[in-house]
Image (cartoon, rainbow, N blue to C red):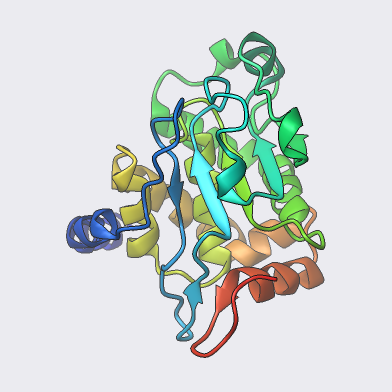
Length: 234
């Protein structure tokens, strides 16, 4: 597994430069530092992730009232803990959105492993049901365009988005490049993907094990992946 990850990291470096140069990737929104689109990524079967269908971000509590209207969102999912959300609540009531709070990590965050890699392993091993619940909400009719966020928009959001992209068929090195574009070490997310595949065989099977069903995955894929000549989201 180490050799495979090392090879993927080498491919990731070039990918990150290409990803960062995409003109629509980073979205400048007042009050955010890490808001970006995961559209445009290729899938193994010749499709690509739709632009402006799935966004990822850091916390939204500093976003001025009404500033996010232009994003055209229908759903916002907050992955932060209850304590984090209470300390820094997001005020999105004026946007008429479906806003959901689904903590990926429950309990006291201070009890998590000191090393980030240990926290990532904990999330994969112990938080699969929460991850599946997040993704299931994205499968609801009219859920997209959607935005997923935590506090920094890197760790919890990075893992959830990585698993979504993997389930859609985006190659691991592209997923790692997306993660690295937000300041993360690509080997961390590659280890997450390897751990998921080792335990369950594939990302799809991991999500099925934790509560998603095949119809959900099919619905999300139809909404999130497009092929040449297909129209944009309704």
